[in-house]
Length: 166
Image (cartoon, rainbow, N blue to C red; front, side, top):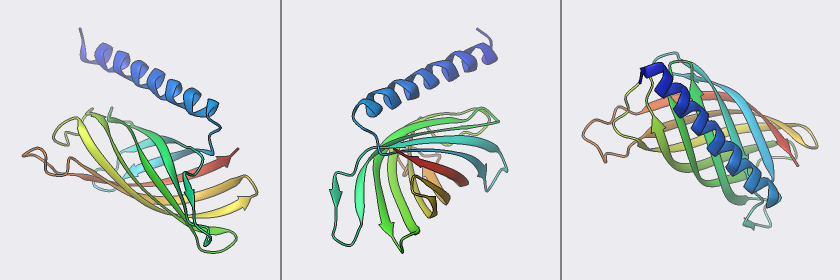
């Protein structure tokens, strides 16, 4: 089977997996859906990202909240990552907030080898509410295999996302 055919089948399978997670989480009254554009800081590759965050599992009186989420990222060079983990939101004001997350996930290399399929993504972002149900978020993430493999170059990505809360 040709590389492009394998990649297309993998991409189709990944998309079906993400949609299945989104539908299952949607039935559990999901909290927000983020869509955005990404740029790899080392290689300059562009891509897209999709995140689905569930309702908070805890909320502090200060407004800090945390819950579970799933995310996917695909880049123009064929790299694809799908993961899930914990998301934390910290309000700075009525409009501004900080987001942090940690998500282990499955990585399929296109042109960028990161040393194995298990990759851990840590993310920090600053967001601004632009409407009662919408926000714009600028985030920076780091992904690596945490030293589980001998080869571990890691990668950093910046993203601009739009969040829709429902």
